Amino acid sequence: MSLNIITAENLTFCYNGIEVLQNISFSVQKGDYMGVAGPNGSGKSTLIKNILGILQPRHGYISLFGQTLATFRQWERIGYLPQRLNALNAHFPGTVREIVQLGPRRKENPLNIKQILQMMSIEHLSSRLIGELSYGEQQRTMLARALASKPDLLIFDEPTTALDPETRDNFYLLTRELNHQQGTTIILITHDTGVIGNYARCLLYLDKKVIFSGTFEAFCASPDMTGFFGPDSQHMICHQHNRSNA
Amino acid sequence: MGLGEILNLAFVQRALLAGVFIAAVAAILGVFLVLRRLSLIGDGLAHITFGSVAVVLLLGVAPFYVTIAALPLVMLSSLAILKLTASKKIHGDAAIGVVSSIGIAVGIILTSLSGGYSVDLFSYLFGNILTVNKTELLLSFIIFMVVIGCVSFFYYDLMAITFDEELAKSMGIRTKKINVILFLLTAVSAVLTMKIAGIMLVSAMLILPPLTALQLSLSFKMTIIASVCFSILSVICGFLFSFLLNLPAGGTIVIFNVIFLLIIFGIKTISPASR
Image (tube, rainbow over all chains, first blue to last red; front, side, top):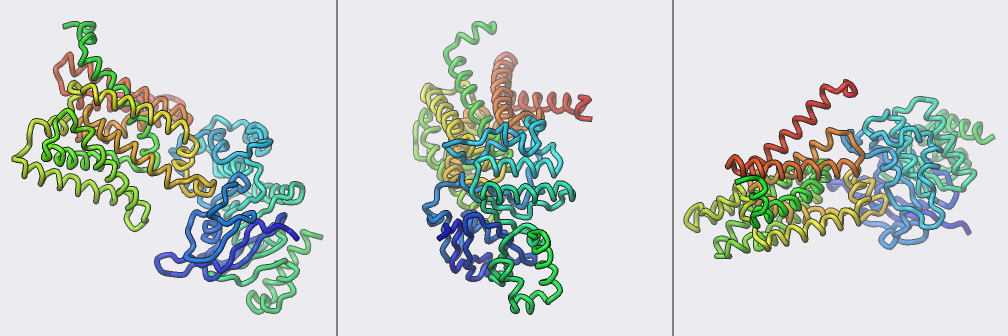
């Protein structure tokens, strides 16, 4: 039986009295690459913030690596790349090296900061202030920070907004490599169902509640999803998935 | 009287030492506050300090113990600001405004009840570093050590929260605990700074040195160190100038802080690297 990295049951979250998440239940297994999609305001980022303890759900159950969220302490096992890089404080006087050093570290066999800077091709920027960098360089710095603890679970929230196509493709290839070669579990939140079709193995489609949760094979064979998306959109997503995994 | 003779006076040594400790404390905490856009918390806590001093003076506490007696009220008020800010129902600046208005209103009413503005209250409004007593010097040293200890121990947590509080939460950092520590230390720092610069200029001691250091575009650690250096230098220069020219120490110290900011700002503006 594979280990559940994330279990969410009947998760409900309200903002100003309005239910933003309604009875969300899903699980993520070790080694999964899950795409989370949905329209604007569907609750994708809110769901992740609930899972990470940034927001408190009204009710529901969350466990991480088999422990309830309240008792979970192994935060070095999770790497998170938030959506709001454009809201980054440009006056923050942190160098790339200082930013990458932030966060919990594994006590055993920690990743060398120099190694991670090399891996992300930002070694030459190590003493530059993060506010002075381009968006792409900031993104790589934040990714390096997320990877520095050698996490078992990586969560990316709209990670490639405003990145150029080449950097974006390299980013997704890296996520695939981490998932395939190191067995890192990945959750990717994006509007782009095409990207999810290309890289993810399972899909969670939200619109305040779970519209679909399962593998791409189940998604492609589901008459309910044909009814929801229309046959053309469903076919296009499934075609992209099949082509990239052929 | 020459500089050597002045520096030999016990009360001058006490004032300078306390000034250096408090300047360092305000400069360190100020970096976190300025970057988190909480700069005005110093102003708010200063107003609370005014109310608290009025309360303890009305209660007949001896002037010697006023600083210590005012501490609990100011610390509680800082937690009230934190609670209001964290509730997300009131923005941080409005929360500071609410609590500081209460402080100043209470201060005015109690001062009126106690028969008008006394000399003691005036000395807290405008500060007088020369009146630092041994208890306050000891308290300054203890707070200096506590701040150094807390910032060293929670350095990465404080830095992460300052960079992005949500990101810090996702790392498992207990942001509430760190915020409580930061706000309580700021409250103590505001009360002690009142002795140097006066209630009116507490926020200047918390804002100006970090702002000057931030102009240098240094790393986070070096920004803190530079902020401390500018703050201590301002206290020493301001204190000596005020003593030699018979000027109010609080105002002169703050003016030196402004001079350093303008110098660094000027250098940055005309340097080729910034063009």
